[in-house]
Amino acid sequence: MSSGEGENVTEANSAAAPANEGPLKGLRVIEMGTLIAGPFCGQILGDFGADVIKIEDPKVGDPMRQWGRSLPKGLSPWWPVIGRNKKSVGLNLRTPEGRAIAETLIDGADVLIENFRPGTMEKWGMSYEALAARNPRLIMARVSGFGQTGPYASRAGYGLIGEAMGGLRHVTGEPDRPPARAGISIGDSLTAMHAVMGITMAMHARERTGRGQVVDAALYESVLAVMENLVTEYDLTGYVRERSGSVLPGIAPSNVYPCANDEMILIGGNGDTVYARLCETMGRPELASDPKFVDHAARGANQTELDQIISGWTRTQSLDALLELLEAKGIPAGRIFRAPDMLEHEQFKARESIVETDHPVFGKIKMQNAFPKMSETPGAVRWPGPGLGQHTDEVLAGAGLTSEAIAELRAKGVV
Image 1 (cartoon, rainbow, N blue to C red):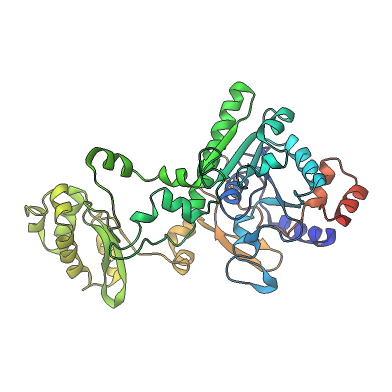
Image 2 (tube, rainbow, N blue to C red):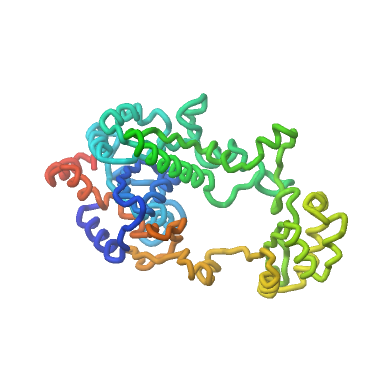
C-alpha cells in the first residue's frame, strides 16, 4: 500500500472514530502474531484503549485479510473485526533491518504479543532475555500450541489440535458420531483471552516490581482450563466424560425442544423450584412429585424420558407464544439466535451489543461491540481493521526515522 492510500484510509477511519477513553489508554502494544490467537489478544487490548501496533509482512499481511467469504476488491469480512483498533506497519522481520526496527519499537512498548512457533524469536535474536535487557518493563505474551517448554513445544499447533488435546473435541457432538467442532475457532479465542488475563496480571505485578515478565499461553492449556471437573471426575471415580449431544448428562431438564413449524426452543428447568413451575405450566403438576423426577438426581437418571415428555408439550406450541408463556412463569428459555436475529432483537439494541463503524470501502459495517461493559472507562470500536501498512510512515517517523530513510527501506522491501 502506498503512503497516499494509507493517508486516505486514515482520514476515513478517524472521521467517525470515538474518543479513546478506555482503561488501557496509554498502553503501547506491539503485535507480531498472525491468524486468530495472537491477533484476538491484540484486538481485546485495543478495544479497551491500548495503542496496538500490528507488524505485518509488507507484501501479504496477516492471512486473516484473505479469510472468509470474499468481498469486493478481495477484502475479507474477518479483517475489519480482528484488525480493529490497531495500526498496521508493514515490516519484513526476516531481514536484519526489519528486526532492528522492530526492536526499536519494542524498546518503547509495554507489551509484545507474538504467536510464532517457539524458537522463532530466539532464532531472530529477539528472545525475552535480549528484549528485556533493553526494556526491563516489557511484558511478552507468547501464544503457541503447546507452550514454550515440554516435548511438544516445537510442534506446530493450530486451534483444532489444542481443542482436541485439551479435551473439548472428545465431548463435543452426538454420541454416535465422530467428535464435532463448535463452529468457531474457540481454542484460539480462549487462548487469546488467557493471554489478556496474563498480561493484565503481569501489569499489576509490574507496579510492585518494576519488571515485566513472560506470559506463556498455550492452546491446549487454555482449553483445559475451561473443562470444569472433567479431570477430577475421572481421577476420583474413573468416569470418562463422553459426547452427549445437546444435553449435559445428569442435568435435566436442560435441552433443545421442538416447537410447532419446525422451530426450536432452549429450556433450562433443572433447579427444583424452576422444574416445579415448568410442570405447572405444562399442566402436569404431578410430575414435580413423581419419584422418577422429584429431585436433581432422579431427573438426571431419567433424563431421556423427561425430555420426551417436555418435547410432547412444546411441539404443540409456537416458539413466540411459548417464550412469552415461560417468561411469565419465570422459567429460563430462549430462541437459538442467528446473525439476523441479533440485528433485530431489542436486547442487543438496548445494550448496543452490535455497533456500526465506518469502513473506507464498504461504508457503514456492523460488528460486535467491545465486552465486557465498564461503567467509567468503557471499551469501543474506534475504527475497523486498517489497510496493510497504513500506519507505517506514521509509526516509523514516531520512532525517529526520516522520510528519506523510510523511502529507502521501502525500496529495499523492508517496509
